[in-house]
Length: 237
Image (cartoon, rainbow, N blue to C red; front, side):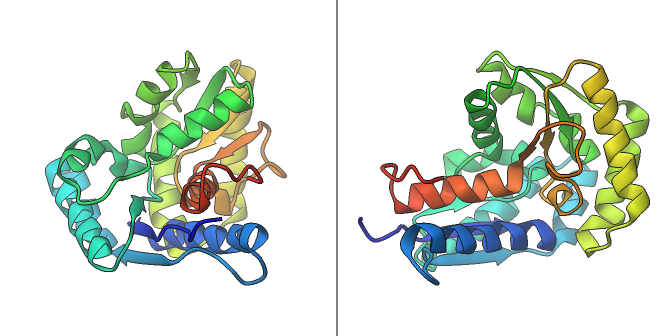
């Protein structure tokens, strides 16, 4: 096996970035041997800087922050970049043409997993900005996969749970119950899986407590990055 490629992580919120990092390290040991994982470098601007741009709908500002991180990661020796944050992927079309490094797109990774698992209609969970965007619909449409967005009321409450609780590492039982009720409604409306389209949601929802099978965007991206790093001939993921 060739030397694994150096993975760059563009962080946005701490909890999601940390979960991505930990997953790469844990799965790396499974593939490469005890305590082994690819070289990893992370750069993270203040979450406040991202939120300020997002709330003003200034996606060029989001792109500039992402590109600045990518530049620093290139200087650190990274071979490619992942971003364990779904919301800021709305700026990816502004990032990729100017980036010094190639990126993996989180929604493409999730869509590929949905195809592999034969899912046909997905519920979308995430921040209000994410679920109102075309980040997932565009990628799912390429595979003929249908989707269901949360209602307006659900979007606001899920957004509050994410931004006021999860990004700070606060996990409330009542918030878990609320997420489960939303997923239950999506199941009743014909969804056969749910996208955990915020990298913090997997901290409170997973296959053990979800009414639907989950597509964990954080861990799926981490696993895909690891597979790319060690070589496409590795099928253990």
